[in-house]
Amino acid sequence: MSILRNEELDYLKAINMIYIVGVIHTIFWWVPNYSLRLTFLLVEMIVVFFATGVSLKYSKNVKYLDYLKNKFFRIILPYIIFSIFSVSVMFLFENKVPFSIFDKNYFSVLGSWLNIFSSSNYAISNANFLNWHLWFIPVYIIMMLFLPVIKNSSKKVFLIICFFVVFSILGVNIFNIYLPGFFGIIYKVIFYLSFVIIGYKMDWLKKTVNY
Image (cartoon, rainbow, N blue to C red; front, side):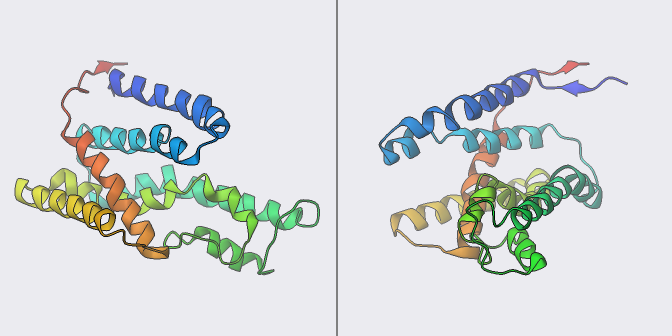
């Protein structure tokens, strides 16, 4: 059975992955000016969510429960396994590495780690650096619940979603609103959803090839 692939999208993902490894995890930390780093180098997640929008546009229509099942096995389950492994390592080597675990209950720490509606780990101190590099997973998990709505919505509903996203982003930035914890996570969802929408409406990444 042939598999329909979008070569341009594959190239975009590959280039972005090389950029993440070659720039974000190397050159990024050599630039002394933090504001300069944030402004000119941190574009990799914009590309990731843009590619998500392009993929959404050309994805097959499936039942919502089948869609959630697919995302669970591809995204959520690996994230849970990684979290269990990481927390286990933290407890195993707590006395040998400079971790600070405030809460000595294993399941409490694991629950804190897996709490997608929290921007911080209350049970862990500096050990939360272990999962900071996966900050986008909770954002994507929340966002993916609504991606089928974007794909299957009418033009009117789609425009309403677009206006909501734009005005939310403008409102937060114009009025310099601080959004902690849960609200901070939701803002990230809305912010990156804008790039999903841009990717979804793009028509230039539409070449496909059979494998």
